[in-house]
Length: 129
Image 1 (cartoon, rainbow, N blue to C red):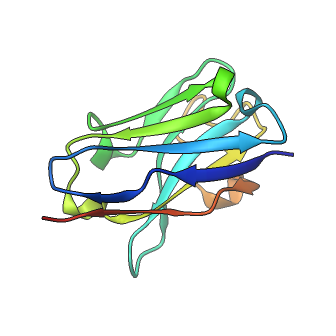
Image 2 (image 1 turned 30 degrees about the vertical axis):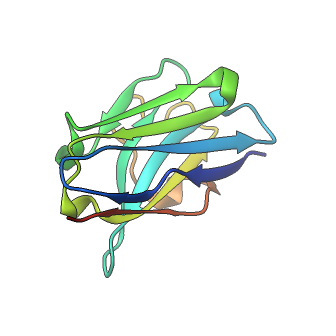
């Protein structure tokens, strides 16, 4: 089974950029659908973006479309979330999650937390001037 380690969070100014990484160990990440979730203070965990394991189809939550990009580097066994044009409302703890179910994130965004068995620890993103 795969173990996930999220990193790359920090403080960014509005309009700035950060790149989150989700490093996998124990199993090839290419066999897994990878999804980034976030949880803002006092709110539930919401899906941000996912990438399919077969053909790298991607989906984005509406508020991040055009600003965030999900990708994976199989050689490094790592997935990424490039976040540009950051806004204060992007402030949250970001989590990467994975599931070895190739039907996820194929015909629609699959952003339910119960669909994913493997989770990394969170990395805090704060967007503030």
